[in-house]
Length: 581
Image (cartoon, rainbow, N blue to C red):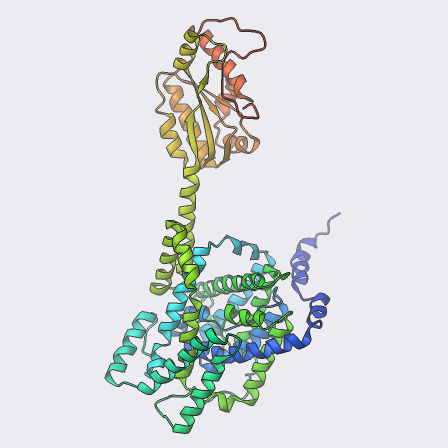
């Protein structure tokens, strides 16, 4: 007997299956040296990115560092990928900027906490597998759009001007250019351009060398040695992580912040699962658990706001560095978080002297490297639909925001896919086979009986074209519809079929159906499309039976006279399918 408490235990059992186990520990201890070295390398790459994305979000470099440490550790420990590295990302920054402008820091922290709870719920509901349904052009389009927005967000710091008011990247960029024109700061421009150039050129020649941190260190030394006050530094950083607290959360505005939280959760899920898939593709034998990855990201986003951090996701660039430097387990990502924590506690005075323009150069180079020209060219050449989806998603990301851009991309992709599927539906008359009939009898049959075969889906996107073609039938007494090749049918298709049968019936044309499959029968019965046909005996299992029924009807009506048939041969039949239907 089932326990009355079993339904309450199921979510807890599901959560238990998402927690790390002994196998994770065993794997982490197999190659500790390689994982520790990979984690150190990733930390060096991640430091300027964490600082830069913290500054870009509007909450300061300390928020970026707190996120990289706390979210990076928890996502590595509880996530579903052995190689994923998590932290603040450019895509999330794009979403956070308008939230900061509208609700302030407390709103961002509250949104992060709510998004974390949503991600845990998605993991329990096993929603991770639906990531595979996001089309590649949508992913490429919003990646291109994100890269453009990240680059635009860096313009104020790269030009050495205070960040202007505004939520839209294009508006803020234009105002920053106007401010720069009034009072040019060529020192800041020089730092940003130099750092970006070193990263881009160095990555081509020596991809394993962390040129980002080297360029930032060089820029900091030059700025301090020359006392370049025009190169504004990051500013004071805390000498450690803040004590976790709920006091700064905006619990009174949960209803207002629900929509932004949904947007953040959706982005965190999408980017994290995409990054984990990229990591799997770069290795042999690695496969992430999408539901467990959502669970780990959820816990990370619940904890990060408590330490003053921003919402986090899996980071494709840092994950790729982790894989390329030889990581084999989640120990590498944990090491990355630990190294950053040491930097927060031991080197914050040095980090605070980094010029903002240098961080802007790091993010400008990151934005440029996000754009995969080869992938964009392939998508543009694939089909017109793919090119349209890519461009539309990218433009929507730039003009609106990332969440709306993804929704628009998915809607357009779905509409174009339905259009393509609808075009596959075929509705045509089946040619008559003379067989053993005389020319006179064959002509009589051709004049009064017509057979149609429906191939492909009969659903809302294709059903009305089917109705218009079928109701144009003229000069016949009997129409046979062969249903055996209908691949799928929805309620709209069933209603349209019922409507077509009724219209032909009012014109005095008899409609017979053959070869209806069980799945089709359920849909047809639900709208009452088979009631009149079944009661009148107009539904047949096979097409030959429907043909005999049509002949009997014409004989009864006096249209077709009896003609002796040769033993063992059909009187008349269309070209049959292999199953005889």
